[in-house]
Image 1 (tube, rainbow, N blue to C red):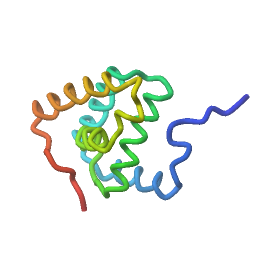
Image 2: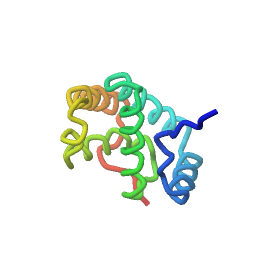
Image 3: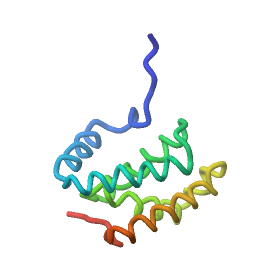
Image 4: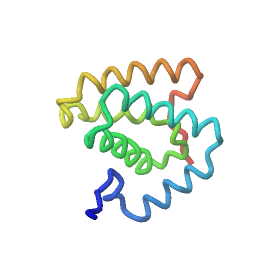
Length: 119
């Protein structure tokens, strides 16, 4: 059986460890907020290979920035769009914009922070 390469396959082992540590230290409610934001995003832009790649890209950016809360997902998605994400994923640009609007509404509804949670 051929092993399928997942969106986190290219993550360095150290980043994978950091991701697990961040997850373990998060509160159950923040875990739920993270899951919900990712679900909204993927509902907008799709669960195909590129859709999963986008989620991994946002998480990678969060780890690079030393975020300690994956519930900051929406903040980093917006940051990446300001850094040219829409130019790289042109075929998903409209869907990414819709996801940002939906996730921003979600973040406002639950009064999530406007700035990343860092060490």
